[in-house]
Amino acid sequence: MKKIKVCIIGCGMIARSAHIPAYLANGGFEIAAVCDNIESSAKGLCDKFGIARYYTDATQMLETEKPEVVSVCAPNMMHKKYVMSALEHGANVLCEKPLALTLCDAEEMFLTAKKNNRILMACQTLRFLPERLAVEKMKLQGEIGDIYYAELSRIRRRGIPTWGKFHIKEFSGGGALIDIGVHGIDSAIWLMGNPKPISVSAIMNKAHTDELGNSEQSGALKGGVESSGFNPEEMNVESFAAGNVRFENGSELSFKVAWAANLPEQNNIIIVGNKKGVDTENRKVFYGSDTVDELLFEPNGFKTEPFFGHFCIADNLYNCLSGAEEPFVKPEETINVSAILEAAYLSAKEKREVKIAELRRF
Ligand SMILES: NC(=O)c1ccc[n+]([C@@H]2O[C@H](COP(=O)([O-])OP(=O)(O)OC[C@H]3O[C@@H](n4cnc5c(N)ncnc54)[C@H](O)[C@@H]3O)[C@@H](O)[C@H]2O)c1
Image 1: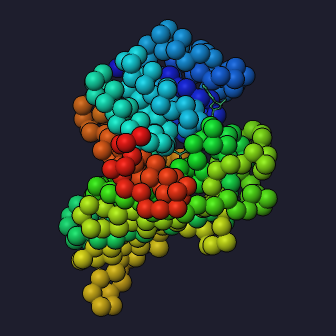
Image 2: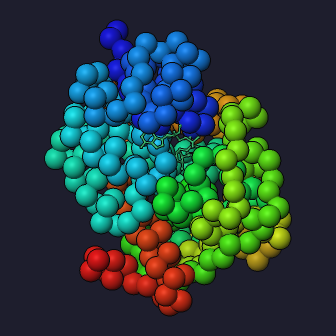
């Protein structure tokens, strides 16, 4: 069977460690070319995976290769430009998280996808953690009941990324919240049934920039990043964020996210409904006055792969393109995530609660 032609924009850690291995593992994709503004990065990725061609200009690549799928793996501030260009060149797009930093950008990107009849999906790959899939199943079966509260705790003790441009706002758009918090916010609102957010209140600060962990504590694979260009004096994004989101249905999500904090390491989402409450990381289900059950879940076949969620999302995309499945990460969910992120940054900056409706005035 003819393979689906893929091109990749941005040849750094996530392209090398997750996107390319995931497409190759699926077997239904052929990686035709890659692009990076740094020629040696593009060439290096080609050589490593035996990919035929590389480019330093994404438009030239899109026009020459005419890919059916594009992976956008460039830094956050370039996501919109490359997503729009890929969609307008007729490609389906898997874009790294965060897809968009504002509500209006997210809406514009999905409208462009719809207009061009193409799939656009954000790589919210941590939804595929088996314990999160188990909670989703419980929710769909009505076991949790009406969800009125959720808590996200995504804490690294010392894990500021020291490769790439994560610490520089002009490239990343923000720090811990949009880098790792975005996964938790996405998973939490998905598990809550995607209620409509109406307001956000948040605080942020920049702590512990002088006490760095190693790249593995910051989320890279061992050997997955080549060099550290980190200069703490350049860091102008938050290393800690906390706050809450109010939803139209009366529920609330409370969040705390850190690249570095004096707290225990955590990657937890707690979901509370009127029938049951679930602590996903500790795999406990609470109900009645004193019952605590183990959260049971199916083992994930890819669980041994560090970026197993990318394998799942590549498989989902393949099945979507053959009409067998719907995108696992839905536009309306990613639009709400973008709105929450934008409102959180504005709230922290202006030290007040921000209503989502305000965001449409900009
Ligand atoms: N889903 C996940 O779990 C996950 C994990 C890590 C990173 N990410 C996301 O992946 C993206 C990239 O992160 P990374 O860790 O690979 O960073 P990285 O710095 O290792 O790689 C980024 C690459 O993009 C290239 N680049 C920069 N500007 C460019 C431009 N204008 N055109 C083309 N290429 C350009 C850089 O030269 C570099 O090779 C970010 O959006 C990040 O949030 C996602």
